[in-house]
Amino acid sequence: MITLRNTNATLVLLAAGALLGSGCATKKYVRNTIDPVSGKVDQVASQTNQQGQTLDATRKDVAQNQQDISATRETARAADARAGDAMNAANAAGSKADQANSGLAELRNTVANLDDYKPASNAVVPFGFNQYILTPDAKAELDKIAQGKDQWKRYFVAVEGFTDRAGSDSYNDALSKRRADKVVQYLVSKYDIPVYRIHEIGMGKDKLVDDGRGRTANAKNRRVEVTVYSADAAMASASTTQPGETNR
Image (cartoon, rainbow, N blue to C red; front, side, top):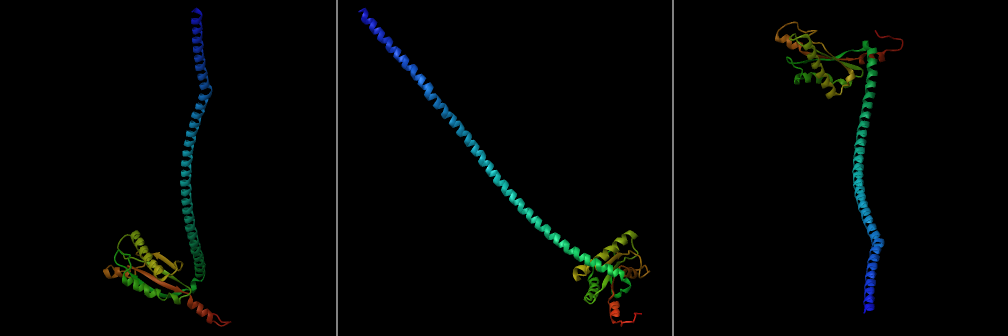
């Protein structure tokens, strides 16, 4: 009996030991096999998340870069347009400069031969009291003198503005200049008379044509005198002079 009981106890202990040994082996297997795999899965998942975030950031950078490229292209187009406008303006300025240089050369020739220029036509343009606006009558006077410009070859136009006695000297000087400006503007804009052919001055209340102090005298003094000087007669006379002869 004692031997059988001992045998059973031994079997129980062996079974328990086997179970314990089996449990330890399972934990060891899990620790050595399952845990590393699980760690790697977690690592891969973390890397995947990071790569996803990096991809999102890259997409955002690409979108921003596309916007920047589009903005740069628009800026380049605008710069090209401005460059084209600047080139056109430069060409126009160059053309005007050439015209001005040609006009200055002709003006120098005019000054050098000033004695050859004689009055060819003149007009008196009236103005209202304290006014520098061209009236229909004033424009009619300018039309008469300007319509004959095509028959002149070498000429210049003298424009002199005047006022009546009323007012201070400084005020009248400025007013007479405004009146002369209006006449010049009309001749240039309507009849294309080159500006370099026009000599303009405001004389204020100097050189009164009527010394009276009444309304009639004042009306006569409020004026702009326009005189066309031409050297065509001198040229014609020089061209008809025979060799050996001199002009007298």
